[in-house]
Image (cartoon, rainbow, N blue to C red; front, side, top):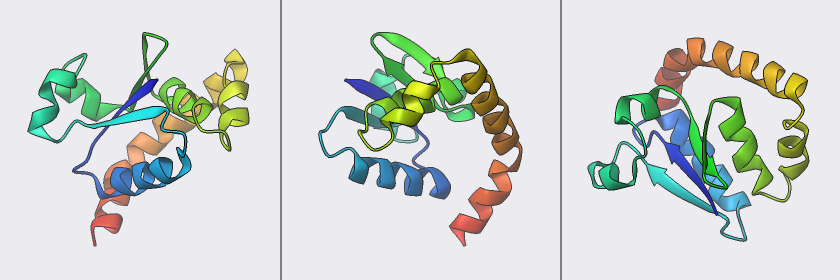
Amino acid sequence: MTIVWFDGACPLCRREIALMRRLDRRGRIRFVDVADPAAGDNCPIDRGALLARFHAEEDGRLLSGAAAFAAMWRAIPWLRPLGLAARNPRVLALLERAYVRFLRVRPQLQRWFAA
């Protein structure tokens, strides 16, 4: 099972995770809302670090950023090809660069989705 930690206080994140939950028809992902105080026992690292970047656990390995997204995608049949492609170091590096750029605009996007 893949574990995904997400920021439930972020409107953008909530929308994305809602979509991933709908796509995860086989129940292969356990989603943990890091913003929920009750999730404290389920956090493998500092809560601040979990909120700063997207994290997932796949096969006992903690992943962050684009690698974490790729792990989540591999658990969802429709997105699995993209997740498998991300096993290529060049593809993963490209996805990570895009993710870092996304992090810069994330605060603005959060404000738009909160409105």
